Structure formats: C-alpha cells, structure tokens
Image 1 (cartoon, rainbow, N blue to C red):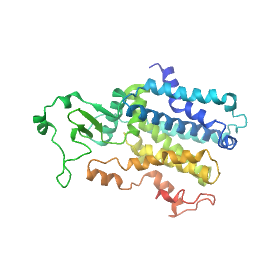
Image 2: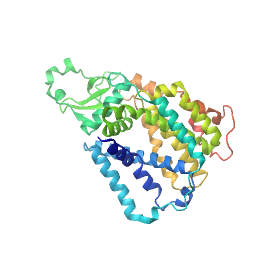
Image 3: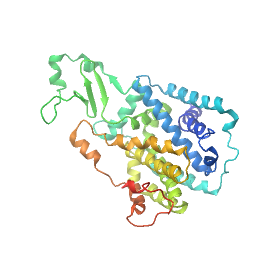
Image 4: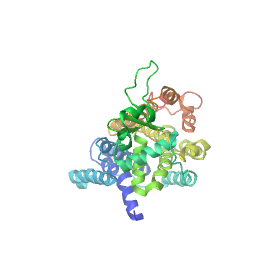
Length: 358
C-alpha cells in the first residue's frame, strides 16, 4: 500500500468516526467543546478504535471481515453523521490549542523512541505467537472460526492418532472444544474442520487492522501503538484526577519503565486493557463529576474488556487460574498512591473511581 494510502487508512480507522461522533450536537456538546484540544483529539482516537474494533468483530463473526469493508463501514458511519448534522458539527466554541498540548506530543515522541521497532515474534506455541498468528488468521480468513480442510479430511478411525479428544478432570469429553490443532488453536468440530484461537478476539482484531494497513510490519507495530495509547490514557486520566504536573511525571516514568518497554515490544493483551482502563477512569470522572452525559456510555462500553480478558484461559484450568491472578504492572504502581496506599487524591475524585483499580 502506498504511504499516502496508509495515512488515509489510519485516519479512517483511528480518527474519522470518533471525531464525527464526538462533534454530534447532542448530550452537552458545548461542555465537551471546552475540553483541552489534546484531550478532544485523544477521545477521537479512542472512540474511533472502539468503533473500528466493534465493526471488525461483527464482520468476522459473520465470516465477512475484510479490511476494505471496515474502511467502507467507517466512511458510511462518518458520512451519515455529516449528512444528519452538517454544519452543526463545527466546534466554533471549542477551546484553542495551548502550550499544554506539548506534553502529550513529547510523550508520543518518547514512546516512539522506546517502543519501536517491535520484536519480530511470529512463532506460535506460546501466548505472544498465538496472539500474533490469531490476528493474521483473522485478517487473511476474515472469520473468528476458520475451516481447516486438513482437519476435516482426517477419517474418524484416525482422529485419536492425530488429534485425540480431550476430557475434563472427571473423564467426561469436553464440550467447548474437541482437541488441539496447534498450541493455542482448538478444534471445535472435527467433522466440519472448524478451528478457533484460544484467546479473546479483541487484540487479534487490532492486529488484523494493523496487517491491513502495513502487512506484517503493521501487525507487529500494533502492540507498541496500544502501549503508547496506554501512556497517553494514564496522562489524561491523571491530569483530570490529580493535576497535569503529576500526570506528566507519572506518564513519563511509565514510558521509561523497563516493564512497560517489555510489554510494548511483544504481542500481549495487557497493553490493550491498560489503554482502555485508564480511558474508562477518565470517562467515569467526566460523567460523574463533570456531569457530562456523553461520557456515561463511553465509560460503560470498554468495561467489558477486563472481564473478557479474564476468560483468556478458558479451555485449560491451569491457564485460567494463572490468567485470573492479578498482575502488578507499572501503571498499577503509579495509580497506587490514589488507592489509599500513600499520597493524596484530589477532593473531586468520584467515589469508587480509582479505588476499584486495586
């Protein structure tokens, strides 16, 4: 794909639908217009990614995903908003760009220096490789559950030799999957040859979008982009809850932390949850403290992601228990002073907003 077409595709996937939705003259649009210019841009990206991923998952559930169809769906959605409200979408009363916009720009530059180039982790067998290959399969096959003709061609009398059926701890045959095709890919039905990846499909869907933009290179860069968004989400949430200086210090420390660097350079879903979690905290504060009705559904939408993430190990009991064990990430440590473990939070933090991070 030509570089100019790649830039256009990125704009359609990660900016256009969210920017149009953010400008809709409903649900206290004047209040949203008074947000800092950098935060308005941040919300345009977060909303666009949520819309793009939802459309991609819906298309894949129908075995109809193609990157071109995702672009068309986003363009149709943005075009419908423009046709409905037209000139009303102009934010003439919006706040202008100020010097504070230099902070997120500096964070983007630091993250770009630290998080790229990503690791070339494409070999299956372990979680990062499974995520990556599941995303590539998502992009190439256009479906969540793919049909493998090799599996379907194995005669019934030979299945126990090549793909023995699994049983649970009581010796009862499993009903969620039949056997394994490769490590991390389960055979759902040996007769039909249906195979599904082990992990939830949100992060692989984003890898598929990266693959559509720039092939394997774009797919590998997806994790770094999510990690960058995680740093920005921490900054904007921290600026609202604790002040801009504290937020800038926390986001800078997070970007420089070796664990954040480690997670940013190989495929994992933790960086996705990090970015969406802090975006939810910010939306929750905007909805409950600022009484901005627009952010109430925004705060509720991504709340399902951490719950889905806990099901990443469904299929193997040991992996499920490991997935449910809480992890201490650098972002969690930076929020720790606001959870009653030291430090002092601002008085206008809504009850239950940050304390539930623990």
